[in-house]
Image (cartoon, rainbow, N blue to C red; front, side):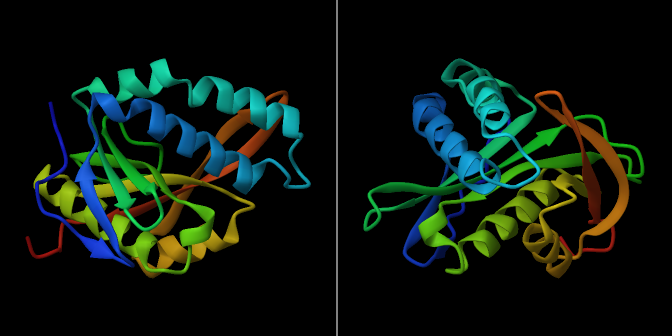
Length: 191
């Protein structure tokens, strides 16, 4: 099973560690809370659709299956001062989205930081882990999907060298939405 490298990163008094099977409930709870906080009250979304999506996407059983899958690498950011989990990032080795160029793609499926921890460099620490892990996995490109109405996340990804390479559909309840596909080549990075 592919797991995050053993190195520990620290930022704003948070420590990274590989996620394991016993972390599914905490990861599901944080993922659901963060997704609801970010998208539940956006004018383009119905809260009930967001809640329905979260109930499926962050069901503990689904999160546990994802954590156990050999294609997934997940790291948790924990802070004793904050009482536990304050962020996480997940990579998925698999097919690439249209527009992504590379032979060994890896998807940055999630990079979540608790609301009270944003602006404390934790997102950058998680992104640094994701890129390091992608290199360890010998990937030549990292890609992700980001909602077209999430300019803060788009700016963050651009600062890390990601560029828009396409678009893909996402359905939230009956509402079709558009995610940007953004990618960053690792081919020229020093290992």
